[in-house]
Length: 509
Image (tube, rainbow, N blue to C red; front, side):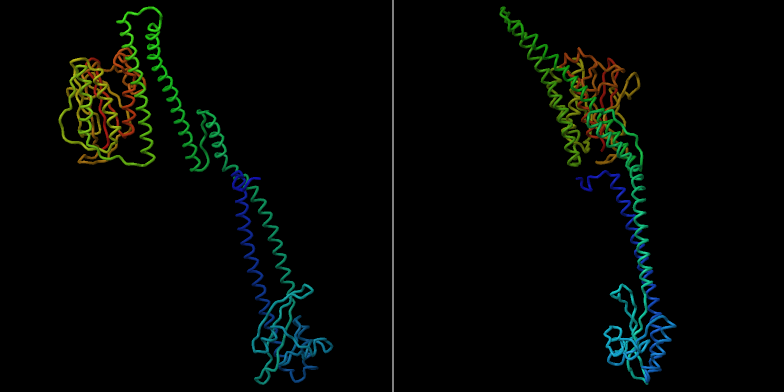
């Protein structure tokens, strides 16, 4: 059996709507019924007390002859008012009624109203008789010559008032029940209308959980449901995009790893044959195998670097850790120093241009990943005798000038942008609208314009033969773009075939 919390939302809304209706209607009706009955009883009590005062006046007038004169006066009082008066002496014993043959004569009454009247207080009270009738009693003291000599008890039938109260209560119950049924029906229809977008969203979530990433919903309903539907569509689009990236990444990684593995197998099989192998060829094959192993190792390391970037960024977002200020020039100098042996090996001059210290909030490891990949990329694609120049500074939120002071997209230079939006906060003396920038400019082969929009894609290589020769897997710039996006920065690229390329990382300061 389902608990109430497990019932469909439409049922819960309908029951809640009916409950609110019943409570509102029943509560207001009960309050109105109570106030109406109380008002009727107050009016009846005032009338009975007035007639009781009149009966006490008659008793005082005929107190000297209660058996004859007072009995006749009480009889006429009963005929006129419809109420039955009874006179008692100071001990509460009945001395007069509406007839001289009543069985109450000589009996002592113990009604609370009688005791109060004998004590000098006129009171009234309501009680139900054993036969089911409702009676209101009023006790009024009788004063003769300034002294209390007895009291008068007047009894009035108020069964009609109670009958009216009962009729109103039954009518209220019927009306409340009918309204509850109507409320349930209206609540069901209203709940179905309100929960229709949620039902569609639930079905879409179920489809999405089964792997149908193309599932979308038509947003509808209230503003909150509209936002929920749009958020679901954005989530589904992002999941679809990530799934496509994952599939492409797995396919590209498999393709890239297949080449060195196939080469290693092709090089190793002749060495395992029974035919004699020239030691020079044997050594050459082993060197080639080591080279292919190095290529595969570099590819695996690059893939691990991408995974580490994603994990580090996710952990920082989960922990809510703010980025600490970093002295960019000192960090870039360390990266340049670490890559100087690679530049010397390839015959490329690597220089860090002088300048003032620059401070910006950034993750040091992410920043090293960006700058290291950009500098290493410049070294790899610069011919022997060329140069790679690195500069750090603060300036407007635009790319820094290229080699020789060229502006982007001018003089045959072509540019593109990658990474997240640069921030506009100021720190360390920067002016509003300025950013910190790190520029890596080389005098290498350059990048054709048609390849610029794709150079940050994973496993993309402008010249596959040259890239394989230099050991590239098409992941260096992808890693730099990922790290730049995590830093909230941008990478601007300007390049001209045969003259070189300029990569500029801009960071919020």
